[in-house]
Length: 89
Image (cartoon, rainbow, N blue to C red; front, side, top):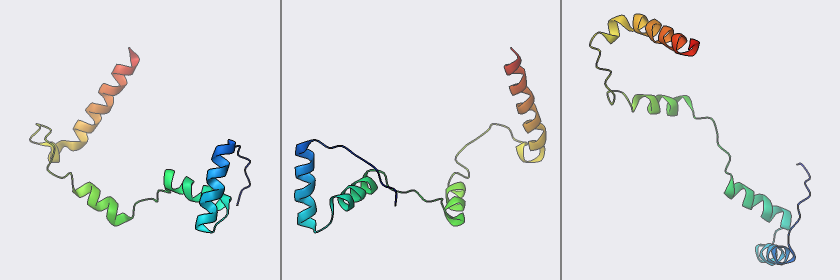
């Protein structure tokens, strides 16, 4: 664990001590729990979660281009080149 110095008002410390006593934990533990509730740890989604997220959008968008599957490389290059042109301005 990493030690940190935090300053509280007298009223905040009184409330923390009361709550900690009721829960039979230290003030430090109470603060750690509060931090976890305020900023929950986020984990990297699993491969399955990523797959489900990606497949959930299939068919929801239309490009208006009917030969996209056959000519996707050409369209990609055109898009990249158009982006380079807009940066030169």
